Image (cartoon, rainbow, N blue to C red):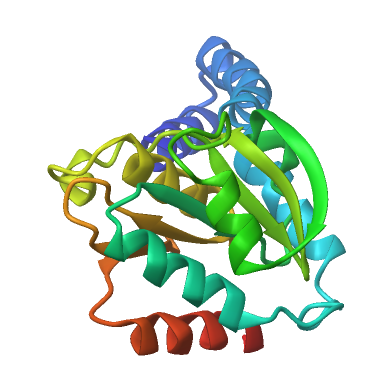
Length: 206
């Protein structure tokens, strides 16, 4: 569409169609403003990535054992869970509600938060560096229904946050106890806890 309009503008200029040229010039002025409005989220993320370009890795190590142990226990008991590990990008603007915790990551704390009787059970647990920063958080839901398939809201939220940020999401299905991850806009079923640990490790070092 842009190419066609550009060709029309060049044609109008070559044959001195003054009114047509003026109209198309006005269109280009408005068009760039419309582009900014339409892609404001993408542009914001782009500038955030530029600001974080020199940041390499995580400022504090994350202990994988408490996370994988909690996920394994929750999966065995078929307790639904959504855990998000933040990457380099800030995801605060994508989070709604939730309670600030700032607690050290441990399997006992994770299982306590995600226990079905806990008020934070239905939301996401957010892990930033080596701390559980927030629990009971609501995340943007994905509209990629093909990728979500027959999965529920937790999987949709995990996929949603992976589409708008570089975060790594872990989901436990309360129906089957199956473990899935969402990263880079893709939803992947995990075959084992060892596989999960390897994928988290790969995420943290990249």
